[in-house]
Amino acid sequence: MYRSEPLPLSVWIVNPFDDIPGEGLPPLRYWSLARILAGRGHDVTWWTAAWSHRRKAARTTPLHTRDEEGFAVRLVAVRPYTKNISFARLGSHRDFGRTFERLANESIAAGKLERPDIILASLPPLEGPEAAARLAKRLDANLVVDLMDVWPETFERLLPGPQWLRKTLYPLLFGRMATRRRALLEAADAVSSCAHGYLDVIPEATSGDKPRHVCHLGAWLPEFDAPPRLIDEIPAASTVPAAESTATGVAETKQPTAASSSAPLACVYSGTLEAGQDLDTLLSAARLLSAQGVSATLHVAGTGRLEPSLRSAAESLRGSCSVRVHGLLDRGAYVRLLSECDVGLVLVKPESLVAVPYKVCDYASAGLAIVNSLPGELERFVSEYRAGVPYTAGSGDSLARAIASLAGDRRRLLDMRHGSRRLAEAEFDRDKTYARFADWLEGISRASRG
Image (cartoon, rainbow, N blue to C red; front, side, top):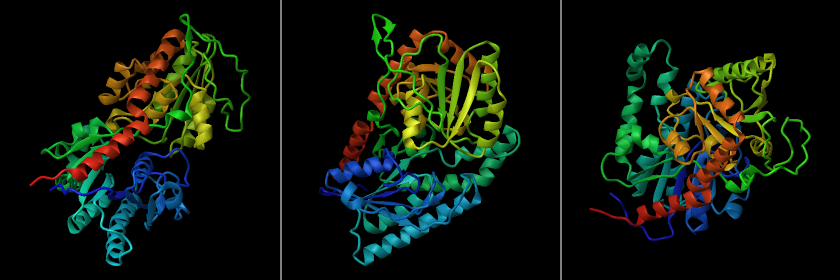
């Protein structure tokens, strides 16, 4: 049942993963939402883990967050983990749910916190929103479950053996998690998601007539300049001198340039270097492009278990196409790298069930033509805005053809770069999309039904 509440609201956000104030800009999903809600006068508390998922390091309570951002951050003690796929991580999630629920009850009982009107909890993990559901029932609050991934289906691809064996093992190993998710979403008063695709593949997320809303992960557009202009159908020539390399190998200038047809095509992949990414295909494509004499540089920004092997393979490549592995860049270096590139590579295997990853929002904001492996929602976006070209995951030949087609037709490339920026402005601008997310949450609080 929806409970009508007067404004301003007391809102709890429950998410252990996103970077918090003090861990680097720009604000991601929950920081952006918390900032907007607080700016409207709502009392916002963000419950998060005391262990950083991205940095794999302990966190401390950020100083002056309430004064500077307008909302509070409450850290929940959890055990550390170093691998994203591990029993230690699952144990850390259990710690988060149990400790969050205990701290919330104790704080309410002691009068240190007011009863929340809305609890918005991210899924995954399961344990956080399950604890939020129990608290919402006890405290008479509206529960909103925010879908960030298809969990636990994403684990099926990690099981050993052929597909028929994975299909057999999955319900035995993860059926209980699927049952818990179904019960959680049935208990929710409303469901939000970072992609339409997640609503499409999780039946219980769309059952009944409860409110639903999609707010993509998005990006902060002012970080990036728009792509170079076209003058009389010809790319405007750059007047910016060539930048010198920095210690990270990333050029200092942010000024976009219109690459000539003789300049190497600059492509970038950003993200984790793990099994769900199509990194072997990247290396295969690089060899094919060199064999064809296509001049290109394929940049890789990120870290993970596959970084050492990827570096070794990249160093062994010879020819006109090279792979440069930068590791995990700070935000400034990352923005400079994207600003110096022409193409953003979405090297994600479709079986990962990712819909519209963070990297795509950044690529589009930087005005990079998108080479995409993912079907569904992202494929429709890229096609609708004429923002890039598809390739078939697992096929080095397909990826090489996509890159070569852009290297050989710079006018088409520039058209796609402008289409990509239009995509960012229409679909991924956090200033707009998170304001609408906040509007929707406020609307839930006003709605009531018998």
